[in-house]
Length: 132
Image 1 (tube, helix red, strand yellow):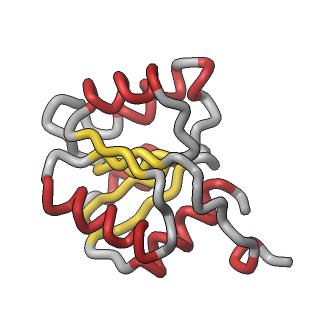
Image 2 (tube, helix red, strand yellow):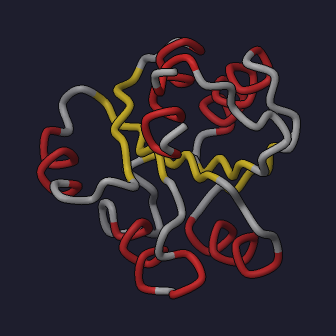
């Protein structure tokens, strides 16, 4: 069975990090459409890190540009903590953010998702990231 054909664990806890409420809502709606139910939200890095300390997450979907974070540093923070070093991450960025791909080079636990996206594209990136 190929990666694309394997089922995803729909009860997996997912953290959505974005400073824009509309983008969090869009991402949540896509995840809900895909059957995910255990969805948590954070509007900035501080909230994301606090949730990661208190709740075990199976995946993080994060905006590349967060106001309280140097671009992409949130993933570096995850990777620096032993308990989150292998945490799968989908980084969401506008097509103009070419440095995202360069910054993620060699990180096989992080996938890039370009805005705007569909539920199907999100599902593909999730499968690629978690290796199912």
